[in-house]
Length: 513
Length: 93
Image: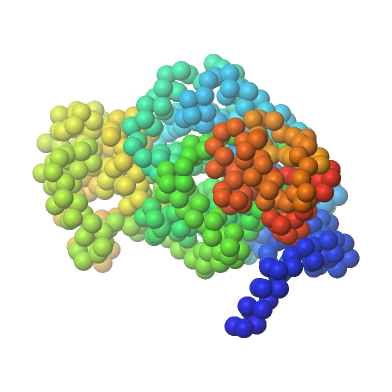
């Protein structure tokens, strides 16, 4: 203890003395230019090496991205995702040591409608992004958030692929790639045929005014900034996965850095997403089935990325978001961010400690029998955490909510058993949809549908919907998928006593197939 | 004494400022510079940049392209033609 005090005092009293002459910890020759963490200072050259090496190591260590695979980079224009784009560019370059070997595409989602930005402002931003993307030469897609209203309901279902042994097939794939094309280089710049029509989304006609208004109406029905952020995140993810699917990409690269993930980890616990922590913050996110989301930047702190971008002039565009210039306490996410970042100032190992703890969380394996797969949340597509026993904490919250609430809201109307939407007659295949919709309308309590949304959502998504004054503006694909799932579980419930299971016991509710 | 200041958002949209600090008996240090910036350059929401007599957590400061942690942070004494850059690490991702 005494030793630690002495060290600290020394550092505090004579910082100037150690400054100008401090040498890089790695090469010990050049003067240090930045402090990575306490006790580790690097010069510019070593920092660049360290940065590039980390990216390659992250991809190489995880062996998820196969050679020749199409990977979609989700770039928000911010410093992290632009650094990721820059690293991918460098990695694919001809003279790179241990070249990367996949085919990248870029996607940018314009969320200007939520900030009430004028069309001109959005055009301008999209043009800036467009020129940034053009310089990379990769196929790129610039999509307005309004496109989320056009998504098919199938985006909410994970697509199950035949699972091979991943480790074995990676090695085989690499060998095969090396043998088949020793001199052929994967140069995505040449393949113009992959550019889709969406590239020209700077065309104003593509953003219908009505769609913009629908989205704005939806978000104006959300009371808190916390819920808005959560809903936006959900919609954004759906749009990204859908784009990846339609354009034929099999991997999605997200640019979240270590600092942001540490904040996300803590904020998610506060949001009630404790059960999904592993999936939300791990390197690999397999919840969508065919599209695997990866986070190659998760080892970089925000400081490293900002410094790298500054020192090597990596272009990025500042895009305001819902949380820009908001007060510290305006949302759970903002509060957590300010907490972690402030703590980091005095205790520089805060972010890395949280991150290391998060690394220990593991995702459950995806190789499950489809029939026995547990039910997934409608919004976030993670396993439902609400099918718990009588004595669980979740049950307790439900009971206290029922007891303490006097009025009805669209969500609570469905909590009480007598308001279940039960169709009088069993639903046929042909006119089932119309019939149920008619029933839903006449059973409705508060204008909107009293469809049992809550049973389809995980705990934190339920909280988000509870923060909405009305669910009527939710995109069509969500509503129709909710109806479909409700109908199926209804039918299953009705015929449950006639179902035979493999072991002949009373049947349990199985997942949708 | 002349210094060059660079930041993205908060200086009225102007990215780079060449400022001449009024001369005083003791040399200018970073702490005083921050106070001076808060009073003279920040037109809106000063708390997004300066908190107390330190920068807001999440803002990196580079002096002549080197991390200010290596130079003594707030106690660093400014010299003529120093280049000070403020980078926000918080937005974007």
